[in-house]
Amino acid sequence: MTETYDIIVVGGGPAGATTAQITAKNGSRVLLLDRAGRIKPCGGAVPPRLIRDYDIPAEFIVARIDAARIVSPTGRLAHMPVEGSYVGMVDRQDFDEYLRDRAAKAGAIRETGTYSKSTRDDDGTLRIHYLMKDGTEKSARTRLAIGADGALSKLGRDHIANAHKTKLVFAYHEIVERPESADTYSSDRCDVYYNARYSPDFYAWVFPHGKTASIGTGSAHKGFALRDAVAKLRKDAGLEGSKTIRKEGAPIPLKPLKRWDNGRDVLLAGDAAGVVAPASGEGIYYAMLGGELAADTALTFLKTGDARVLAQARKRFMRAHGMIFRVLAVMQHFWYGNDARRERFVSMCRDKDVQRLTWAAYTEKKLQKAGAMAHARIFFKDMAHLLGIVAP
Image 1 (cartoon, rainbow, N blue to C red):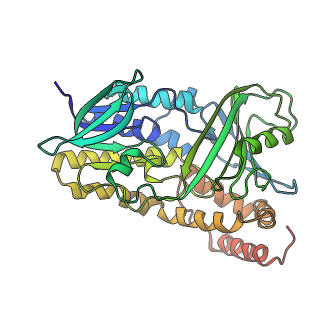
Image 2: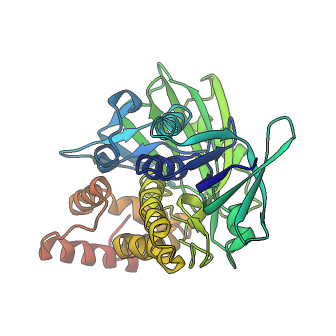
Image 3: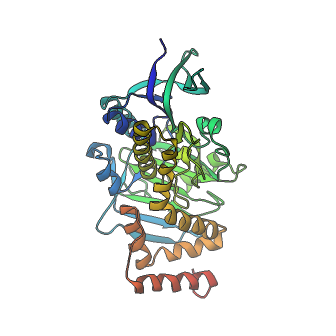
């Protein structure tokens, strides 16, 4: 007999696992479908708000970052201390599995498999087909399918027009054993490199993960050699001797899709919906928030049967974070354009007003209502750098 679910969640990353946990906890019959062994390349940074909002146990915070070091194309440094707060770091391999396990404990049924296609039964009910590891196909019926299967979601492409048309950065990183003696590495500091040598249009990073570190980069230029760039960064940062544990690469979206649902019985969340912050590439918090909004929307849909409510997930997200996404997109487009601009951008990062407002916005995930004078100072400093009035 074919299983029938209220919700099938395709993808078990932070977005999908969060959706599955919330909906199962609220009494829905949920199937969480995830591919085994898939880890997304990710720096692993999470703000304190995520840790509070989603009740993350302390043992999954593998490092607490109290500063960022920004490195310009010419090697000039900007030190950005996180005053009064911190940035948490997680290892996605363990963190994602914890979230999936938490969903199962809430009542979601876990299945390991890869989504292959959708069909509809004679009564119009959506049927999700998926391949098991041994190549056999299974299927299940559902009232609602939630696509949390990453950038260029296959479920999204199958059901939502233009879901494949989105701006992407291709990311690649290497997880290495923690360096013990490198002069350029600190276990409580994130290093961010703005340099065309490592990325022509994004940035590269060295992020501590407790016993390991993530060394990576990203670019929207398909011809740019990401692996070679990471090799250069490891050499330049004195980390080429660290043992490599694993290597990962994947596309990361940098613009929310214009539509997240098909108006009937499919809804997207997380990377599948495009909710990764431009400029920073931060996605874990936004993925979990997207999963929460998808869950809230799904529960309303199951209760009312009104497919129009599916659009509320995107509307609520954009109402809360659309402005900051637009600001970051403009910033990335301009300041990441060439090394001369990157040099000036790093110089701006030394400014105390910029640092204070940046960290306050990051840790609490909202634009800060700082004093008018602080905003005025930042505006005039930005214009001075833009016009080349001040030296980098």
